[in-house]
Length: 268
Ligand SMILES: [Zn+2]
Image (cartoon, rainbow, N blue to C red):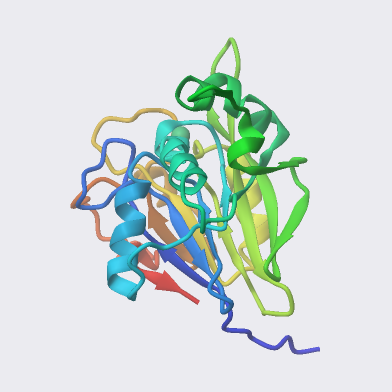
């Protein structure tokens, strides 16, 4: 049966840069919009107040309201904007409490390990996560649905550490009855798990959005461009590269990739 292609969902890369980026690229966060006007952020890094405003200026919405956020892991370029989002909705009588989605491993630590230092005391009130957000605790590998879009969490190794590995949770993003979706790797090392994930999903998705390090020094926590060049061509030809440094010294189209995602680029 041919699936009908829906044009309800648009994926906007409001930032495409690494943790060290500047306003040239901003942090790698995504804004998903749907026909109803609702908006979901995939990660809300410390640049989010600038990136959402820039998106708003470019799309005729002076003050875009964020209805939901998915967090892939707890690094500041992915969650550093949540305090801003919490305050800007808490004190706005017209704004609904945003939904926040994340795997239990991260969401259960978000308040204690990050947000409570800035958000806990409001005047005489002692607050908790649920005063600012509607939390949805997810199981790794399981799916959830928001606005007719199915999101499936994909566990990726981000930091290999002898005391404790840090995992990031990518997503497969598919409109229900909307044709092939997208694989978004989130932050990941280049390892056998990434290879296995890419081989499994490449035939099923329209594009792969791949974390890519382009610096001459390697941080060991991202997939480096030169390692990604060793992937099979069937995978590279579906791959858009993001999380790069400004003016990366590579030519991805010559190497079989779709290209680097540029700030502000949209899909769908
Ligand atoms: Zn990270």
